[in-house]
Length: 199
Length: 199
DNA sequence: GCAAAAAGTGCAACAGTTACAAGTTTTGTG
DNA sequence: CACAAAACTTGTAACTGTTGCACTTTTTGC
Image (cartoon, each protein chain N blue to C red):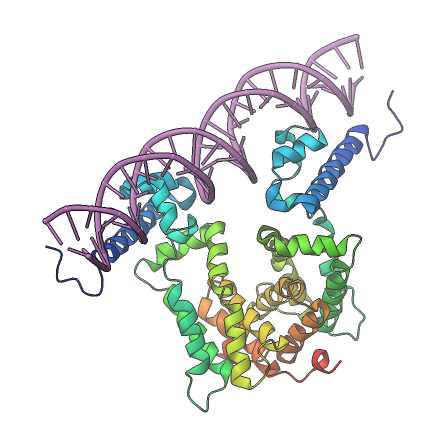
């Protein structure tokens, strides 16, 4: 008799609630007392679940802070494939990264949040890893767009350099300008016609 | 009986011996049974010291594998400042990285060693961190060489991109070619005369 | 309603790492 | 040579992230 629930389902809703409770509680505690001064046991306690359950939702302590992984890959590929017809790939990626960095530097509690991340090596690291996780996919998207083989080495390099620029940028005093600086270095060499390829 | 030791000093010698014993024992065990299947307690045991002593020599388990950190910064700066007068900075750095990657891919037990590192995320990570640790110094060296302010943003970006290229390369099927591929992308945009600088 | 599936729980344990309060060895000096 | 200070080691216990396990509760589909 619990009909009328096609998509959400009660369980799904509860899970979502628990997940949100966990990540919100965690973030609040982290902001108050520092990432390293809070144990996962405390977080679980505060959110009123067992430690085991917490680790069931978030595979690592760091994952509690960045609960927005899924959208990333989609939007990243979209920046490559969904750009205006006359816009070069790199220009589109530049704009995408600019926006992304800008958003990171100005969210709700952006100031305190960024400070937390930058002051906590484990978190900076994790953020970078989240980006680099999509390295392969981005490389393939770029390759496809340029009509190159999916494992094209230059595309792999480009994807890596660009994604890594994110961590470079957020650690900078002026993130948006740092993104532009990095792209200014990369752009003139793209697409490449070079030594490595012709050796 | 304690004469005849001018420079080294008995203590220094013992320390060096212990250090070498630890890192050699560790590497051997790691190669035999895998990084994650060996505990630091086992290593300490095998080298016949206490765990506390082990952690005294090597701050982390990963550090046991890369016991060659000091030379890195020196050689890196040397590649910038000690190059032939007519050679561009980037070309010198390209050759340096090429050599470095080549050496990594062909040491004594290079094949097994590289496999160990690449199969162990914690180790790949650590290797990258060792390189990035010298980001600032490299940036300043490049800036000095070009007569730019020490905190020049483009130099910071360049240093980061280049050092990060190392991890990109060793993960590649053809590391040396990957270094060249990355430099081929970076080189044409250097030195930059650009948007970010003129905005 | 009910059996199976899914989620949550508490507990114990492991591994890296640190703190601490001893011991032991080496060193420089009188 | 003796000896006190400094440097190094050690054993033990603990903390923290993380995992495995056996068990209970909840939700689901019929």
